[in-house]
Image (cartoon, rainbow, N blue to C red; front, side, top):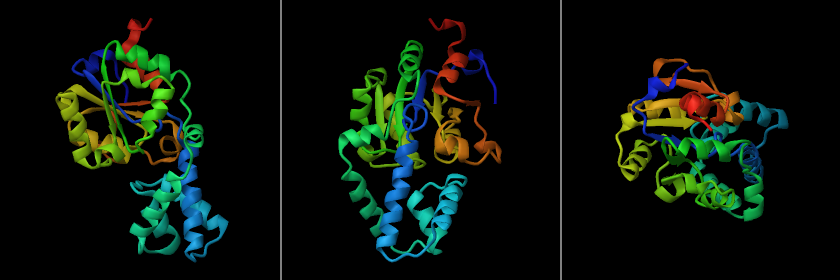
Length: 243
C-alpha cells in the first residue's frame, strides 16, 4: 500500500469523502450514537451502559454501513422498527442548530492548504454521505472553492456504497473511473465500491472509522495507498511539486 506520483499518472480527479479526510466528524458520529441511544430508551429498549458501549465499538469495528441498523441488531437482536427509528433520528439531528452542527464538524489541521495544493494538479470532487448543510460548513471554512463537483448524499438522493452515487459524481465530473482516485476513511463504503468501479484508492486512516475500523481482509478491500492524513496523501502525490 505504497506508491509514488508515477504510479498514479493516469489520475486526473480526486473524489474525497468529507467526514474523515476533510472534517473531523468524530463528535458528529458520537452525537448520532447518543441521539440513537435516547430514542431507543424512549421506545422501551433495555440495556446497560456497558452493553451500549460494547455495541458502539462493535459497529465501529465492523463493516456497518448503517449505524442505526447495526446498533439495533446489537442491542435488541432485531431491526424491527428501523424505518421509524431512522426517521425519528433524522428529525432529532435536524433540530441541531447550525452553529452547533458546525462545532461538531471542525476542519482538520492543514486541510485548507492541502486542498489548495492538490487543486493545482487535480480536479477535486466530494463524494460524501452527509446532510446538505455540510456544504455550508465547507463554505464557512472557505474550502468549497477547491471543488469542481459537490456530491452529498442527502442532495443527490443516493448514499455510499450505492454505485449510483459514484456514477452520479462520475457523470458530473465527466471523467472515466480510471482517471479517479477515491479518498476516504472507510474500507466498506469508500474503498470497496471505488475499486469495483476501477478507481485508484487512498485510505485515510483518521477518525473513528479510520482508526477503529477493520483491517483489509481481501484484495477488494485493500487500497492502493494507506495514509494518516490528507496532507500525507498530498506529500505522496505531489512530491517535489509542492510549494
